[in-house]
Image 1 (cartoon, rainbow, N blue to C red):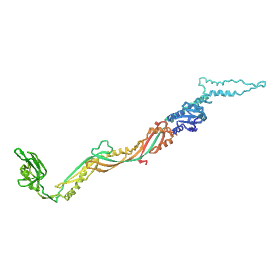
Image 2: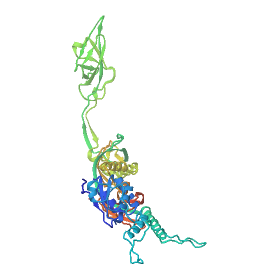
Image 3: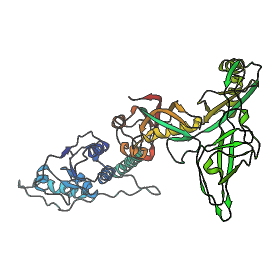
Image 4: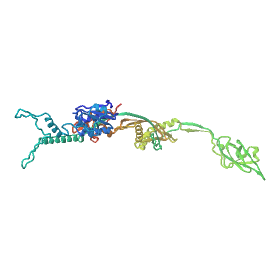
Length: 524
């Protein structure tokens, strides 16, 4: 027994497009059974059956038809459907394989014979001369229609039956033309308005003179410098006590030999030697004297002052009695650098401040203008305050370092990061994302750290071929309801040309989809 749970009853005034919509709505069913009344408008032509069969095949469904009308059964079988004459036959599985056509369809000639036979079924009576009645002899064959001879030289007269055929043929052609026009002429323009979903991201960007290529958070920077110099009159007012400085140099110790015997030993640190004027010097490091050789040792005057300065070859006395007979000493170069204690006039901080104050106000604008000129429109960051140097002749020098980078490079990195945040199946709207950043740190070697921010809107990626395939043949209200249920959609406008029909074109190529964005707004 077949189940009756999936039967679809067709109303008399339903169109074939309504049956297609009902097929589409049963996504999980493999077989569908239509119960069709005899006068159902939706299935009165082979074209309607072929259209329904095409959509049934496209949706992967087997269609059964239950109708007592032999003509509908025949059309169903020709289209590849299964046909049943009644619900009882459907329950028992008694499928129609060759419908019995009724009177008025393909057996009009037989109907005429049946009419004559019915007329002679009852005996006809005629009066006789003796009051008897008798049965009339009746031919079993149907009477032949009288042939009408055409008028001489003219066309044969048109019989009423022929005129009816003309009317039927003309009506069929008009219906076919109307059906073809309904399928091929109409077009639809669908405008879908979408609003984006807000998307934001924050990232830290690193700038340096030579970034690693291909990194998503590094950008190049350039270090520029500017120097401005100006001389101003000033007076050094500081007094400074400068201590005496001890003279210093080096001497050479040489091993003394007596015949084949030579002295050897260690020159200790602090060994005293004298010059010819009696100035004393002390070695400042230990030196090992080789057998029969020489060694050099550093010395410094015992008493600070200019008196310790002495000429070359004047230091010749070794005070150490243990070494005096075994070694000799001399200075191959002059001993110098000694200076007496003195008081000097120096520039003190107050003198520098006075010069800085006098000149900085003049040089700072020039310094900034020079840096801006070198930046050439790029973003300029001054990591440090200008360095100020003041010489003793009151010349003021300002040195400034700047770090420059391209705003466009930073913007590309921020937009790239925002694009990576977009979920699969979505895309950024046509509105350019907004980007901002602030400098967190900058150093004179060209390193810059930025805190960047980017924001924009996303919408789902609409597949226009898929949308057209889904809404073709649907009613405008059904198509509008489907489109308004898509993400980000805020409005749907549907226009049909040349006339508004109860359904959209059956061909995707006749449907135009336009996606329009609401600029600068989001759906959340």
